[in-house]
Length: 331
Ligand code: UT7
Image (cartoon, rainbow, N blue to C red; front, side, top):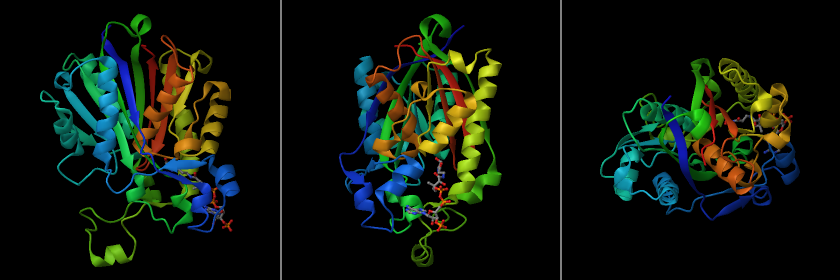
């Protein structure tokens, strides 16, 4: 049955690095606390010249070059981000123009840390339906632009980066590799626990919103933590059951990278040993829509993901948004 496969990927992280040691000079924290509670050692931070589109463009160029196709062959660009260059136009338009993707349409997709998985779901179905041949799914976030570096409970968590998956048709997931299925879910009851209060139509930018630091990420960490562990495990289990496979069949779980403890608790619930779980947040922190492509890229570089492997992606983010997506790796 026709489906979509991931045929190339690309990533980009800005060169600047912010270490735990440096953060401990900015707020009252320390390397031991951060490593024990989150697993993060350092994160990449974009300098003032780099915006989200720049990272998305760089990652997309790598993916196109690896696949050896021209940008003009791309049919759709799905740009997943909570930190677009501007509220409008869509950052997807900026990326389309810079790439020279003259045949493409596209849009921005806002689903926070589940954004990339939602982009994959949409992209896979646009390809599987026969509507488009090449779809670029991009996840990029410049979280450092919306992080309050006086708030120790959030500033230690996030970093900047971008990633790209190129999707194209596959005749059959079992033999050629490709998309098998997904389970996505949103629950707006979680909205108060992770958000950026101002800058939208509810609370437009004003001198007061700036003075109250309302253009920064606000989070009730423990609420999000509990929800993340439960949902990533529940959706993963339900998705595997739906497709008649067990956790033992999954070669690699690639979860959203928010907190090492969330990942290990999820893996434990699924009964998956850590050898089959991708963790690279020590190097990047939580890059929101970019964690899954960054983790997938590292998995390939480390030889942990090969053609034919069953791979399970899972994520939870602000909203709440949550999702799990099952693929057979195609290259
Ligand atoms: O992608 C989805 C987005 N976000 C997430 O998935 C994040 C989910 N949440 C988390 O990862 C964790 O809840 C955090 C890492 C944010 C916090 O870890 P925690 O184990 O839940 O800590 P806590 O909030 O319960 O705080 C414990 C203590 C508090 O002090 P008291 O009240 O016990 O005296 C905090 O004030 O740790 C304190 N604390 C810190 N201490 C040193 C909070 N942040 C820091 C810090 N350094 N950076």
